[in-house]
Image (cartoon, rainbow, N blue to C red; front, side, top):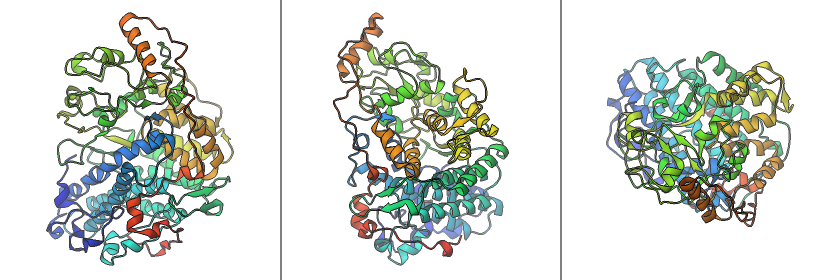
Length: 592
């Protein structure tokens, strides 16, 4: 996908607006003298004007995306991180960047939409498709905002807010209003988007928006204003009480998911690990992705390998993730044990998600004949030297979001990587997720279902990675789907939002599960390192009796307030009204 210059084309319609009112949560594009009347004149210009919405405004969300989705949820160990021990507050830098990025997406997507709507000369079908893409990204930004921060302002037209200097006097809308707004935006996007991406380059189509809408309805089904209490103060959190999910919303989730499944022409990729390789950036299963590139301005690239890769993993000296790794709790979920040299390998997703002793990868270090986890730790490869020891007390290391070394990057992308730069796309909505959305929607409030379609879809997801699971189940339980979602989507930034969805209608169940997780590491990292090193050098594996799971660190204090992230302090200082209870937002005046 050809990218464009972020400065000269990003939301140019704002250039005549009064920019002095901008804040972190109402991001303003760079001021410039660009004249939009001379642009959007043909299909290429329309598409170029939308391309950057697939990457740049999302860049500062990457770290928050992983920390919220995976560390907060108990899938990933990250030392004393406030995301691990639930001590997060509004001064956290990653939280502030996350919020600013999401509001930036809203502003940019809205302005690109307005520019396209007012443009003349371009083919109408391409113009409409690009407008639909912009609205889908706007909706996805709001979906992250409401699931992260709860009630937030609805800023349908950022330009009007800026021109009227209302940015410091915006009230939050009720959570139900925000979900209704997201639905309204996506319904409009669906009318604009084509049935298929004619470019074949991973652009959004109608079914991508429908897939997102199915997920929105599934999440919304559990939320009820009647069973919610808004609390004011520093954290502005919500308290929910247990109740049944809304059947009409569940039916809508199933309806949209099934339309995607039966009519989009998409299918699951045969090999699970292929989904996360560069030559599968664009594939049938990946529906909505951040489309990163190394061939452009800063913020267009994927930087996740820096946070997650072990020291020395690539040639650029920009990896610092050796102290962190997939949690022991996630290892338990996969039926694996870092204190054993024997890999069960009954689920292909485990190896594609985390490295453990004995694991080797042919898609990393293709110039070195492949990658061996323990060899890397204790011997290294030419131009790839680790610190010579195991640093992570869970014994595991990340796999997803890593591209490998520069030779791998060139192999898969035909371009070189760079310092904190890769072109590996981040998939934020996959077809397998849609399959499981349908399953959960059909289970609904009953706890189980015998729906044959749901049973078959569940089978397809599991059988791809667990070959011994060789026939459709006769019934599905909520617990089946809950666990399957974790294994299928582990380390893809989604798990915490599953907990938020569950908290809406089963708050105590969500609290209890998070509190019961094995979120700590083993109590003696040096002994774990020695265990691994002896096995690599001598082939001996003797676990000392002192090497046990760390129970001395208390379980996190998970409460109702834990499921709504604190608003960034910078936003609250700019607009103190954000600390007040939300107000009813009238959506009847929303037009496109």
